[in-house]
Length: 455
Image 1 (tube, rainbow, N blue to C red):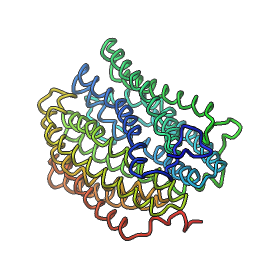
Image 2: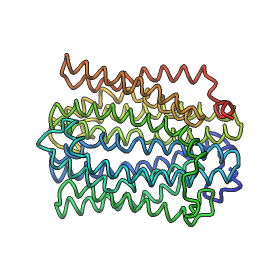
Image 3: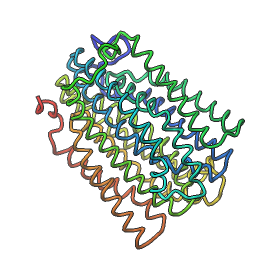
């Protein structure tokens, strides 16, 4: 494997070497990193559910999709910088890589401040709109506000990670998350299990841990001899670079936001079935989050691989790598889905021993898990599109199918048949529709020349 000439020894040039080895080698550290990151939210739910009971678990679960909605736009927008950095890294233009990095970090700081203010001030309004059960409202507000007190760290860590991923550095985020995840679990056990400080203390533990990982990234960025070295004098929003980042990042941010909005509306309908349903839905969501980590790892690797190779003009190589990534993601997803289908009651029981919670959570798992292959395919092709500079395509598909159609279906079904299983079925139905659209686009469009057409 040849290292990028201007990148130092921590970044990988994905335009040389065997595609499947590069993609798999990149994806494995990403998988471990995301596994550790998932422990942030799961540790909160697992420890809170075990020590504080079903109502406390429902309070944490009630805010999960709302947190995703408010953070998803900013985190999705960092994908735009990743695409730009991958392209210029692949074409060997270090000055433009540096400009994109400093602009991205400046945007991240501004976004983090905005997110903190919005999250803290409007928490009660958001939760009332979501029909959060009165029995868990006070605890949900406390958890949500403490979580968003650390929003700057949330945004900045994802900003730093997107830069490192774009240049093929998937190992250092793993090292930083290993430390912060252990710290988070230790603080959760201390604050909730020993001191019994309540639900809000779990959010405080998460905020402290996220800040720790952000500080470690910052140290690396200021000391590293790499194209993403951070220098205070260069930290500004470069106009032309901002426009290029937004060209690719705005669609990704909007895409994440509309998915988040759809999930919030799903959560709103779930909450109408009261605390048991909320706790069950939250427990299943944590399991699904873990289940999809390997797939997310492949899709992140695909975006970097495609971006670097198309930036270098390696079109056939980009096609070959994309095929491997898509097939691998689909196969792994289906194997994981079958395992969850079989083990659903035991997995839900890890979060809450209430038989009603277990029954509802297992019902959702057995409706959705068998169709993970469809979700994986949609995400994989969407990642190929983003890497090719075609970020508008996945945004349009997911806005139409995962947001508009999904919401319309749920609202219609809940109006005529108020049964929770119809909410669960909204996911595999919309995954199937988006997969058909993505398949047609992947096979019949000229996605490999996205950057050329914009030159």
